[in-house]
Image 1: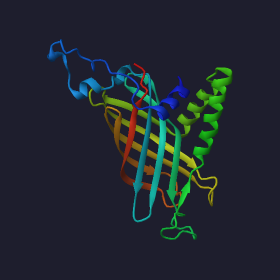
Image 2: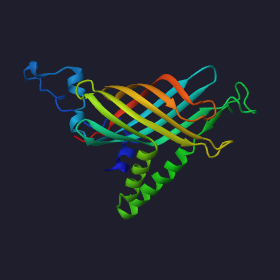
Image 3: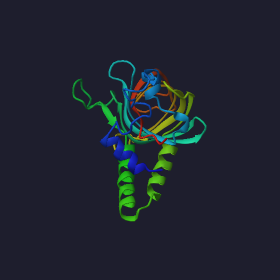
Image 4: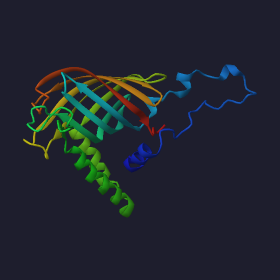
Length: 233
């Protein structure tokens, strides 16, 4: 597991490897060429790990929303089954009951503290790898992230246009906001991957009352991601 390399890849590039079969000599038989989906598909069954960068938004009623901008890392478990963990999640949740909230003021959202914890662990992992050539803190970081924000993902279709289903949950703590409330929301996902773009349709259920998000289901929402990135074949 090379989490540091994965993070560098997320920042630096979305196009990092040639796919086998892209280059065909003009003198070769044109029948050897393949279609777009075949030549650019990711063989998930042989991928040991990959990263995702995404954005998701669920809105219910006016001024009520749950927003996430996150980066995740998925690790192979068994055939077609992966364990994913969100290493970063910039999370905002609306709070229209706040007395200081006025329309257009921009003060109606609370920001989760999880991003601060992951930021500290990211820096510690970087220092640990740079100075001591160690992955101990990086492994701890992934383990903690997999405990707090995991997703089990199974690929029903693993080639050409990979399709997967996922089941997981997200936690957060609004430590720097009034009430210091906790967040615990489960989700089921249907993912469709077209090259390095993933579209996810999700259904979620909240187990806690957290500001505007009340206990119970909030129907469907969509997530758009760049990934899988930095796959190992």
